[in-house]
Image (cartoon, rainbow, N blue to C red; front, side):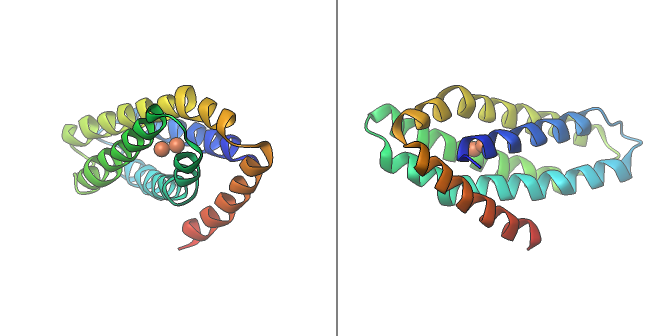
Length: 151
Ligand SMILES: [Fe+2]
Ligand SMILES: [Fe+2]
């Protein structure tokens, strides 16, 4: 599968999981826990394959300072979602409104980030990288993702 198609499919799954989490109430503790576990696994695998495989290829192919800016902004957004908001949410009691608020913020962060990738970085990557290269990157990411989801 083409790298961009693979990443977009991940985004679609992630949006659905985050919307499902947002729709839960403070009484749905078990459901919140199971959705959050899925979100954590998916988010970690997705950001890892981007950071290990896709982003470096994008940065290397990049030719303008805007490409570099996009790269560094994307990394920073991963950090905000994955290293700050997600760990907080994992430590928050799912029966509280605190949890609802943090889940909403995670959803907004991820949606903003995925939206920027889809509107800016991916179209630019299609210009910078050959079709064959996007296919090869997609294959690498598929393999790596399977590994990460198992572990
Ligand atoms: Fe990303
Ligand atoms: Fe992404």
